[in-house]
Length: 278
Image 1 (cartoon, rainbow, N blue to C red):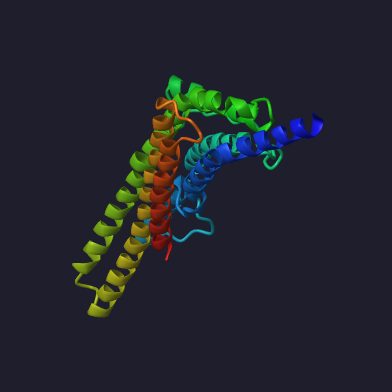
Image 2 (cartoon, rainbow, N blue to C red):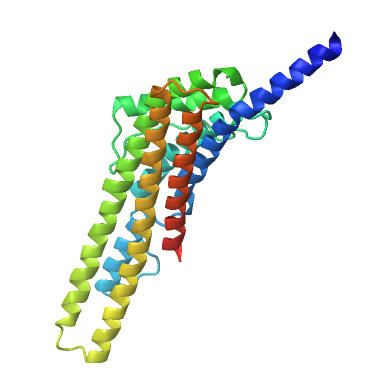
């Protein structure tokens, strides 16, 4: 009798593990997609330093220190990072719930709070979503959320992950890319005026034009990376909501097909992202 029971348990555990593999794949792809964020070499503080430095260069100001007032921009970066970590922690929690090893990941970051800065404003529902998603993630990775409650975890977190994803997309698209556009216009005005300066010879003007297009090229590559990241975050959030709304079954053909399609789309975006880094 005991060997028979043992055999049944082995079969049941094997089935349980295999049925959760699609969830692990989903989590892994989401983590890779959102994880592109940390590779972007541009943020609010960078934008501030660019504007400040360019302003001093264009006015021929020489100081011992940069003396750029960018503290507000550092605060904005911290808040954006908190949004990013909230999403990463959620997907790490889902990965852990679908894994047989619950101790692979530990949340050692202190509980963060979001506060409205001069650059980024948060509504009450966004602050609540951040708090709730962080609480759920902590429960998942510390084992307070059992593996057989994966669906409950996803359903409970879905509205919050949507709000956080939408906020992060908005900040990247409207605020960060907006600052890049402003800087691009400043560069254009400055270098365009140089092209009309009669005191400069052809060599000087050609050098200025080369410098302008180099700056513009770097910005364009960084902007394209941010745009790809925006697409990835939006795709992951939409797919998560779609799966929750469909009341999926882990081993169903539709669920596996959806994960496969999402994985393919994310890999395509990741490839495009890598191309813009070159």
